[in-house]
Image: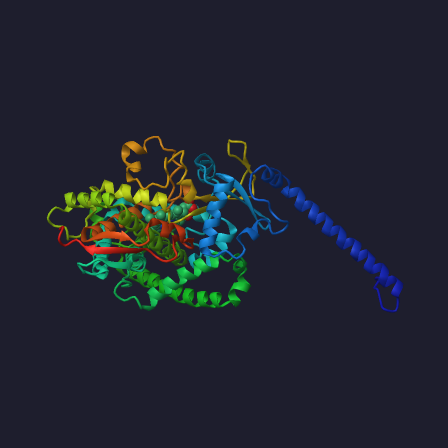
Length: 523
Ligand code: HEM
């Protein structure tokens, strides 16, 4: 039987055909919209009970951030928290974000072992850089990799890294100069080159000499790629790959990442070949002598472990290098800036250093020394409270979650934990804007809510290397503060606060400008 085909010779039949098609398409569209509304009904119902600014159709609250640069974006978030409180919602297009700064609510989200996915947006923008490393992965891949990576950050391995921290810190103080007159320096570029040297050597076992050869190709590409990552992150319209790839930013990122990934791939291949040729046995990380004898990098340990493929090892190494340099660098810079304003605290830190180093104030720090600097550690913790380098933590809320105070997070929304405002909650930190390292003395820390202070995150996805970060920061600060006094923080702390921008890490747009002078007379 011949099938019916509309032809131009039969205009009446054509019309009928178009009518049927239109009715069919309209029905499909209506059913799709109804199904969409049906699946979203619970999310919308629970969202309606949450406070927050009024959204506009389709765009939600996106216009609130229209035209914001990185500084204004951060300021806007802080203002919104001040206005709407420690739990409120924002609609970013069709996505619901619930911003949290309340420790009880944070525990329900960060402490939930099933909520390990970050947002689609963060993953999309970060993936070309970090590929499938720990920061971006989830599910079973993340679980297995996290366990393996965590074992490489064993205390014995960290102790062995202190020699490297100290050696690179001594290069840093040489770069800071030896003038006895006070000089004003933006310490961020110098300190971040030092942390880059440290992380490349400890993670990959390769020297990149960032401090001594700033113009080197590898160093320039790492710095450039981190800057490009920040810039893309704050431009949501560039999350669409084909748009991003057409922009100058996209082309520059492709070129820097091609170089970086190629470089790391080569290092991994060479180390693998060396390992197979050597017939080396797997190191028992709890055997101090074996660890000290071999002096292995994290990459060597991952290769010895044998569970990850070369590509997986590559992704983890790239992730560790990126996650481990800017975070520690900004931590050290905030501490120095705060000490420039709080001379009494600086003096106490210096006295503690004197008690550890005695007459030999210029020697390198050892891991034993680090155990005798509890006050410096309190200063670092208080600085991380006021200025957490990672100001937001994202999680996908996989199931409906009662926050216990009348609010319920709907399944399918995203939580955005605002670390900065969480740390400035007067219920947990009275007079929150005041810099007071004694808040972290052992006696004053008793009874504090475990989710009130989360510079390294919390729960299962907490920073895998927080001990590494603290030990490195202590080593660098001990080395700097024994050699220099921070005389002044240019413009005071207000200048820092007013220009905070949230790129890859939270830092002031104009850098950390401090006035330092040599302590030769004191030592
Ligand atoms: C003071 C320095 C540091 C700070 C403040 C810091 C902070 C953080 C934070 C807030 C997270 C996210 C946690 C979450 O989403 O809940 C994180 C994750 C991570 N950090 Fe750090 N970090 C520091 C140093 C380091 C260093 C030195 C390394 C590497 C040597 C490192 C490697 C990582 C990795 C790989 C992750 C991802 C963990 C996962 O998703 O399982 N961090 N860090």
